[in-house]
Image (cartoon, rainbow, N blue to C red; front, side, top):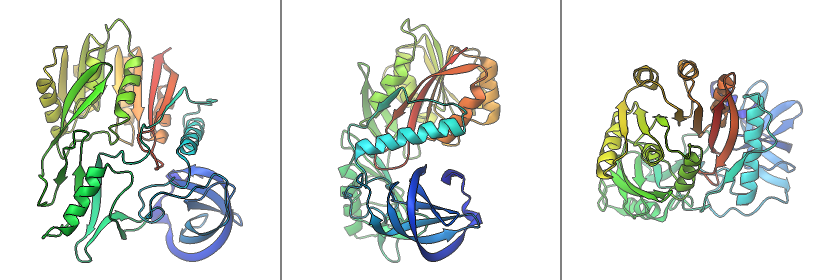
Length: 403
């Protein structure tokens, strides 16, 4: 049983305590122990620890809980830096050193690849750590209770808002904006988003803010000797960790042919972040994206960066757009967390590009898709890019080569 497959609608609210020996990490930020023969998924606990647990959700064959008391500590446990850790629901691993977090993420990816992808790997071919373990997030969505005047995040598995005055994984300008909004004359009436950049351009979206505008931002990204400016509208997706994005881009470009002769499709391209960079290492590059705000930004970014390469963007569903684009040497695929639809996988197989570069923030859907592609493609490299320190989230970039 894996926590990521648990369906919450099959559980009931519970209130009981148990003393449990934690046995292993189980993904999604939980660890696994047993209460008699029942699996208990416990947050914020480390394998080897004996923990008194508050079981707050329960089904016939499993339960979910959180520590009340650590009876026997793991030597790996450290003091979390954030006073809200264990309450606010944002982080999962602050009780561990950053080096240990990377070890756990690698182990969980390898287990997921074996269980779902039927791929037994001894280790990943690379791990790219984040240059910053804290204060790295460039975007945060804050939950609001206007009646009680709370601003913060949902506690895990609840709709209860934990009121906070700062988030230690958010960039500092986000925390400044949070506190400015908290004391302004008009308290926000609903959730809002704060986005900032390395250029210290900070905006507040969705609510009136006295000292901030509700608009797009521009971010400059430098990698592989090129710098591009990107417009990011408030409804467009952009990776959350500005400090590791260049390393992620560089790894993708490493997988391209040194002759720069490949025709490349960048599927689920968003605002064109990958597209613009790889276009300088390709014969032709086409980005495909279904989100209208994102593709509008992509066209804008193509123009403002005065791109001279053979590059274009296509608005549309990947499955519907691909048949109109002809053949490509390389497919770069960076889909939503759910991965590719089966129809898209089948069409990719029918196109048979010589290489697939697959970036994913969900190892389970990634492993599933790699398994579906394995009849035609061999996994050559699989690299963990730690876009999300202190949390259970994992970004992977993988190279698959046609057999």
